[in-house]
Image 1 (cartoon, protein in one colour):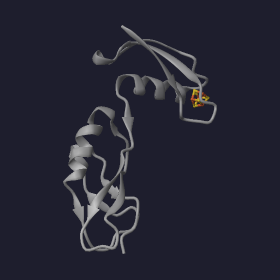
Image 2 (cartoon, helix red, strand yellow):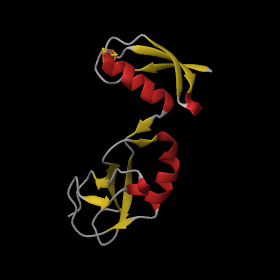
Image 3 (cartoon, helix red, strand yellow):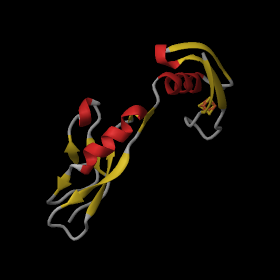
Image 4 (cartoon, protein in one colour):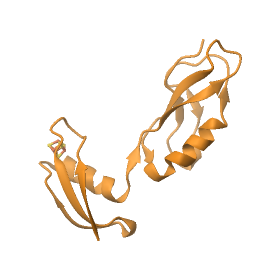
Length: 121
Ligand code: SF4
């Protein structure tokens, strides 16, 4: 059993929510300090399955800039982030891109796409 203080980022109040349990087993013993149900849900999810939007950049070919910014279209498991960075290093893009263009669909089977967040002329 462990206890974590999780800062809720769902709204600007930034409540500090104390969650106890066994995240490996997905078990939550207690959750305190939230001021609304959205915060409780956020803290419990963050405790057992933390996720993050991944932001990075990929190499370009035949463009005036060497790199273009990318991000995942939805949060992916925090534990996948290092592996995802290694995958991103293997990618090279060319041609025109505008923010939101999909570079890799269902990136690493996460259900999120890897999309451009910058432009390429
Ligand atoms: S618990 Fe509710 S009120 Fe507190 S930061 Fe999260 S969303 Fe905002």
